[in-house]
Amino acid sequence: MDRESALRLFFALWPDDATRAALAGLQRGLRGRATAKENLHLTMAFLGAQPAATLPVLRGILAELQRPDIALVIDELGYFARARIAWAGMREAPQALRDWQAELVSRLADGGILFDKKPGFTPHVTLARNAAPVEAGPVEPLAWMRPQLVLVRSETRPEGVRYAVIGSADTADDAGAAAD
Image 1: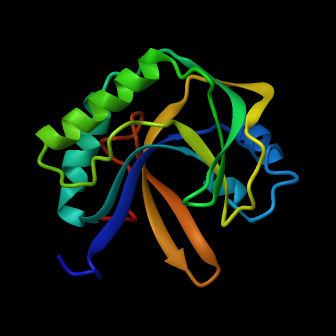
Image 2: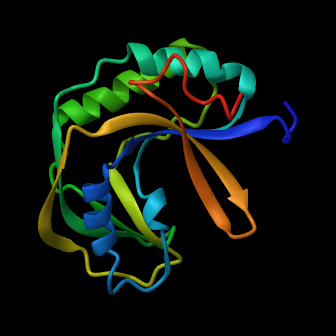
Image 3: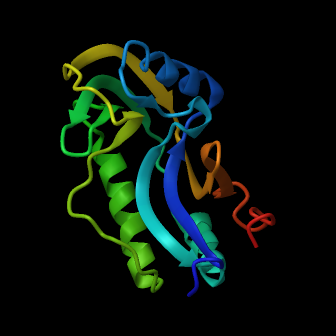
């Protein structure tokens, strides 16, 4: 697979506009390179460079994966010191979220998709990169109702990284024409 034809992809929970605005509000006061508001998300599985030929398999997984009826409560700030990432997450992630992510990873493996299966799953939304350390701890709880799982393409541009949703469970059959 050459780099020109590879698509940099990941599965993520994509916030609605109100949740996105509330997440962006958590960026106030952080020092570092803030994640663009339109790029805020919670990664469920990072696939990296994938050939375009994998898109039908990925969309099939997206269409078949059961969507749990869950609500997430973003209620803490954290910091990954090694990566210098400030993030928002959950003190107690619902087991249904962990099961959903595990099922996604299992289906990707069963579908022959090669990707980095990092051990453990720390559900979080990256708020800033190259961030100064933040004091980890509770924040005013933010309810994220019925998060939507989407397939996202990451594109590096001169003005920065742009994420484009190329598939969702609602449109898995016909999404992503621009990426094909």
